[in-house]
Length: 417
Image 1 (cartoon, one colour):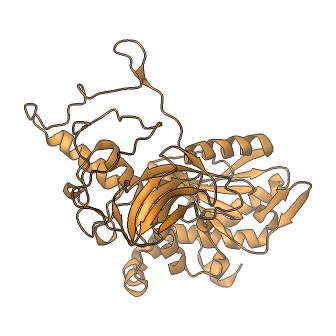
Image 2 (image 1 turned 180 degrees about the horizontal axis):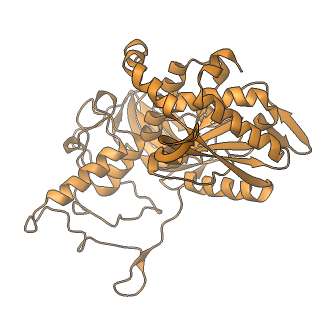
Image 3 (image 1 turned 30 degrees about the vertical axis):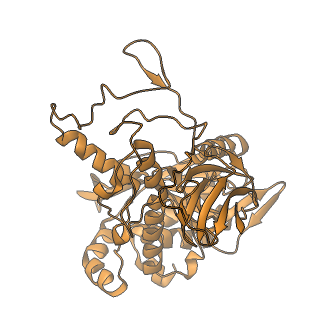
């Protein structure tokens, strides 16, 4: 009996998906719940599991095809078993492109992961494209899960350690490079944007065109926050099982300031201004596929440990490519931290339809004046980009000052002053 493998329901804001990678080929034995194919949308990579035990039959949606919700991806012969020695028909993709680097001949058979080995979707695609043996790659994720960063690091280490005479070593100068154009010695390669990158580009242009963007700046002395963190980080981690970072201080300060200035937490809907009575904070997270902004819901009701654990979970899911649609939608205000990459000052851009975003930056010791004396203090520049259509400059400046005052004297959070 044949069972259809269909595209799962997509959120209202997502029109279609791209077939990113098949992990089984016609004739392969599959188990119920086993991932068959990855679908890439403009938000996340979606795994489609097998609905039954059986053998994968015909594939009706090839890699690179656009599919819509409930479309048939392939068929499974439920209860069937793969015949011994049966060759598998190959599955080719019209949109597949050979990578610039290769570590094995293109006609060598693909390697299989060892039993029980878990590979993140992004890592799985890279392993397939580079024709690697996943059994040689150590995983840094939970239960040995292989992340894309593990694959990249393994390739880098192998390239650096390979002697010049080793025939199996990476040889980038002789690696095949199809799809290259340009003059001799000046190669170029044309690569289509991923769905996520295209969506990021679309939203950034939308923010620039549809909002009156303005940025205000301030700086904050983080001496007290650093002292609190140093004093309690061990006890905090022991009690709550998660590390005490800086972001929970900023989220709590932002929520307190948003409660004082509701326009910063509002959004524009046509000719209306929507004032949100809840505080869903988007946290910008870097992932192998690009920048994503998952949302912490009801931050006014979360403890600092809840916030830190939520952000840690987002970071891991971003690496795995396992963030859900729900986690990537909504949000009334966002925070981005360019300081982790060394940025000293920048102007963040809005995440539509939100009306403001707070930019954190690198903590740098600088001389400042306190009580008439020059002292060295750990300073951070803060930036608030806002939509001037609904937020006046006075409100934006006072909002940023409120965050500064809270961070320099966190006791204000307890006293609500």
